[in-house]
Image (cartoon, rainbow, N blue to C red):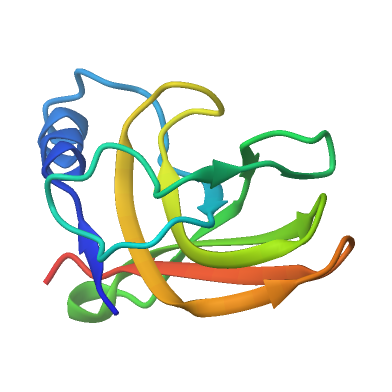
Length: 127
């Protein structure tokens, strides 16, 4: 299993520091394909829809946790299965559609039936 800030995600951080982008990376999606998350990834492995709205990504709830050296950026989102399947990876994006894949992670397959949910928590520690 791997969780990475993608190469495009690193560039996004630089763009945020330069204030050349105003988007927040707080959209979460999931997929069913096989693979190990890597820095060069630009999409999930076989993205699949989630409810509500039958969309590829949902808006997560972002927050800052900690202060000083312990400060972290966190996004929490609960995705719901539309048609069942085995979820193997998830990512955090800068937009509902298009945008930049900021963080990509793979995990052991979780078999879902319609209506099942997974809550993802992405925590980015700048240290």
